Image (cartoon, rainbow, N blue to C red):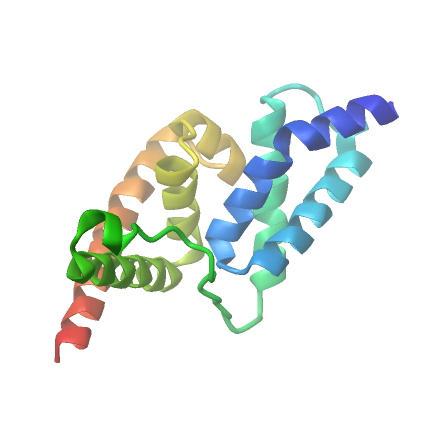
Length: 170
């Protein structure tokens, strides 16, 4: 059993970490919640009925671990120091380099302000590339509801982004 658990961890740890990191924006918190996710998964593995894929099941556990963590706490976001910003020297356009960095910051702040279910749907679909069926299984919603939620989430994201962009231009 230990070999199977190790294989499960090695196969999915990066995806689960990436999801939790994108949800909260805090590297150390994502590491902690990833460990908690796998701890809960290992304890519950005997109850896994195979009604979904292992990855969907793990993302569902990660979602509940994350929501349990943020419930009742003020949202604390940390913009990572190592995010990818195109090298302005390579592009010969330092202004573009600054624009890209600012757009990244605005995108992160916009995502931060979305309700948890909107943020989860955007991260799972747009950043993790999961199907509507997989997201539905993770969030306990139908694929149709996930589609509608994604549409609303994108609309709200655009509104928040535009508002933040307007505030920065004032």
